[in-house]
Length: 501
Ligand code: SF4
Ligand code: FE
Image 1 (cartoon, rainbow, N blue to C red):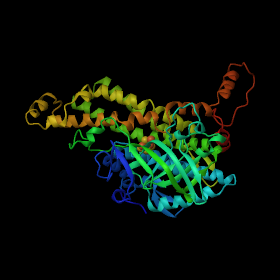
Image 2: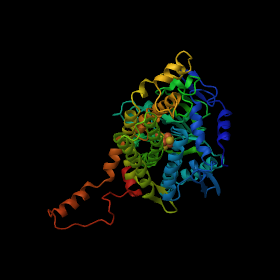
Image 3: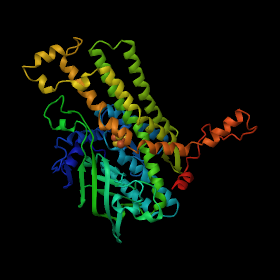
Image 4: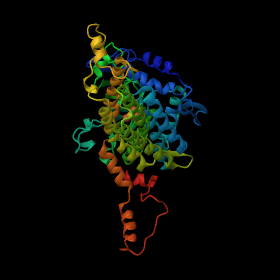
């Protein structure tokens, strides 16, 4: 089924009890909780995207697994174009939410497990792939809201999992029916708005770490799972009643997910002790997610560019050459992130015969590396254009106080085409998106911190070959054997991946 947004919200409202905490208190209904409701609404946008006229061609895909149309957020990419549609879809949904809409992590997890279980099947271990395809059909048929959980708490970064078992999620017991797991996953995006979690290992593992090389899926309403929602900048405003300051639009959330000896039935286990595959899985997942950032972050960039342009108009400076330069610079930065995500898609890598496509790992890592820098630049330019009011504007409650209103209206008025309220609204929008976790902090750390991409980029780029070219052109060497490809990259195929593992 292609669920509607309403059907999704109803399902979340009426699901079995899940143990979720916000600021120390247990949440009864995430769809009504002021802290989490905006997040549910952002998540809902991924369901609406399959039905709304302007987006349904992007938001739907044909599944050859169930021979039905499915929501694209459950789709396994069959062509490089599918990957490009993903980036376009994410940019579009950002325009409707002004937020991270959280469902892409689960989507990337589906594609990752699909590929890794295929690779394991090719090496003779077929059960994971068989189980996964059954699970995938269930997810597609029911249009399930998935979270992906990769990041472990990691404790002391110089110690391996087996040297500090509590810091990584681990298998504590294996029975013939399933496994028991304990540990915690951190910074899990959209967790409270999800129905199920796909859990994956967070790093390459050695043989001694094999109890930590585990991947599975589990409904969030499983006993002994606890979720502690993290705080965000300005989140207190969600508890306000207002409609200007109080974040009337969407946001995302992250949570610490605790697994206290949780049972996972064997049909939901997609990796168990395969420590050699753990690094490969992480690499596949992180590139998928890094590619996606080219879409969602450029979409938020559009909102910020639009807000900065409008604020410039409101004070009559939009034609000033230096303002135009800054706007132009913002567009340049933004389209760089997007273009890179599109390149990662269209120059995809085929990982198995009948079409399973992985993003181009070089471009995916470049995309994400740009995303660790450019949103900060874009926000800086927008702050510059908006003026100090972005950090000092009076509250909506001042504007609504009859004693203060005439003064605020008089002194904060710009061009007469706009009211002071318009100005305050736009300032708040810019402030709340430009300085949000989704646009800044997540841009740095989501899908792996900056250093992780630099390592990946270094691994793929062949400095030796580039040097050979230079040596040949300077005639230090008289001969060169040119590669067939223009890019001096090392191979990005499965064999290369296997070696990394
Ligand atoms: Fe999706 Fe972007 Fe949010 Fe990741 S950061 S879940 S890609 S919207
Ligand atoms: Fe993310």
